[in-house]
Image 1 (cartoon, rainbow, N blue to C red):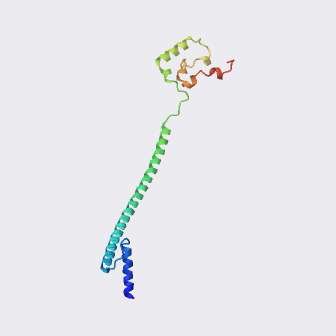
Image 2: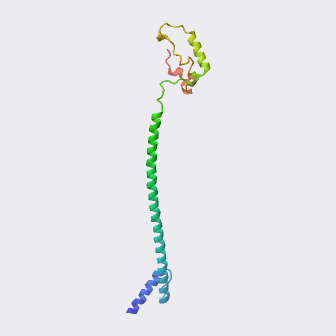
Image 3: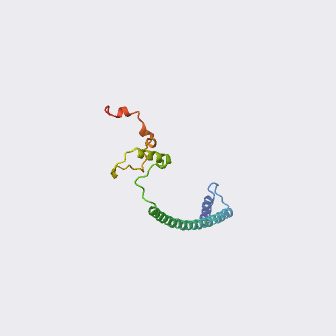
Length: 160
């Protein structure tokens, strides 16, 4: 019975080692295949352990790098906020009225002076003309959609 159990175990081991081959009864070749397979599995397990250790080391390095990047991002945000505050403090408030650049042109200034010279001089200060704004038309700086007059007859009342 003991011999039959050993033979059955050898057949089972043979079918586990090479399931595609028919079962062999040569006990020496079965034991040799089992030893070869065990060595192969042992080598593979060692390689997987080494690979796992390398991956864990890489994970640790990436975590350190992630934390460094997070700290750098926080510092950059703080620097950005500080610079924006400095920029706000340094920038002058927007002017209430900024004349068009054409108003500063010498030709426009002379036209404005000629217009002022033609006006009758009033005795009160309230009637004094405002010289900073040129006496010139501003339609050339309006967008074309505002200047479109094709729909005027439909949109305006007949009395207009």
